[in-house]
Image 1 (cartoon, rainbow, N blue to C red):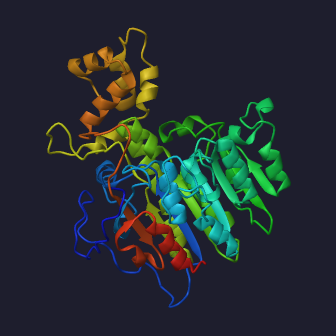
Image 2 (cartoon, rainbow, N blue to C red; image 1 turned 135 degrees about the vertical axis):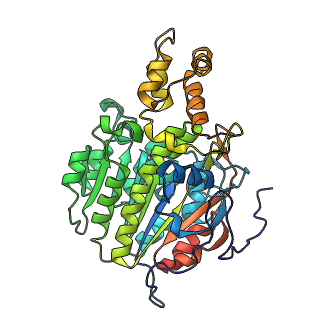
Image 3 (cartoon, rainbow, N blue to C red; image 1 turned 180 degrees about the horizontal axis):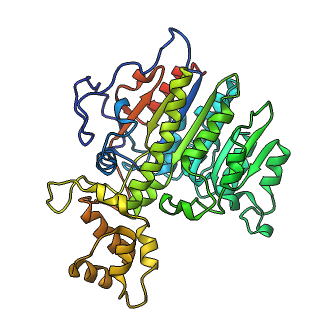
Length: 442
């Protein structure tokens, strides 16, 4: 148990189960200058995504996703102490190339610090960035710039991120940078003030971020954007806030980091695909994948123009065990989810005490006219949110096998110089090693 059985090289004609693709693209996606290292890497992590998310998203969108032409292989995700990983252990594996126990960030199983691919990039003189729709101190971004034995110690993670002087930090979690006296979680430190003293520009709204989009960051100038006290709002509710989209944060990060002549390393996480999976909320899940795809498009568009940028898209694990098809249906109906405008939890909050308004709430936020059986199912449920999500998922022919992570293998996509190095069957610890080799990092 917990051991990689072996690597199976995927041939160019192999059909990967659940991906609906006829070939694995083994050709270089851009001019690969012989012997020259990749100057920039954009490592994009759709937390909780897997092959079945890819299949359902293709139906939801009505056409291929931007990454579908760049499928390279698959990889395993188990942690050092479990067949099913959490985001801390998976993030550590994907940032350091070493397995660790669930819940641990940037340390091996003996508690020793592991160098991350971001830190190695810094040592090579590159600018660095972290972007997420969770708190920026959440497990995945934390695994690239901190070392703690408990992923929940987000105040310490915030301190270490600033100590590591990551050049661009964009996401939620402002409370983890503020002292208790100002409504935050730090005992005494005001890390926002500290960041400004370290040369960071601080922004906290979408308009402030976009106004700073064209900043040419000179030596010592950095950007810290914290757009919510906790995590950012779900994509379905983003328009109701002053928060930027993942694509806007990604574009801004690239605009700033590309000014560094030594190149850059940027990690971008679509954090809330995972949370939607935990809730078995198909509408929320597809909207978050859509938002993530917009960010990937920004990265690939830049890579096409630049010619020296490698874009890698790889999730840390599957969440929810999403299926393609449910209740014996032979049709995939994820396109119905394009009409969903709210999460199941939000819809549940709109129900009155008697739940006599189920039909009105669901029709308003999904466009579905519910059957009497569906209405009764929601009215009588112990958990109205889960019941709503089940009705919506059933309509979309999407099933779920879990409310947690699963051990499913994960697809990896890559575009740019050295992209072909990802062809094959890997473990998650292989990904940062391939990236380091492509960048010629020590």
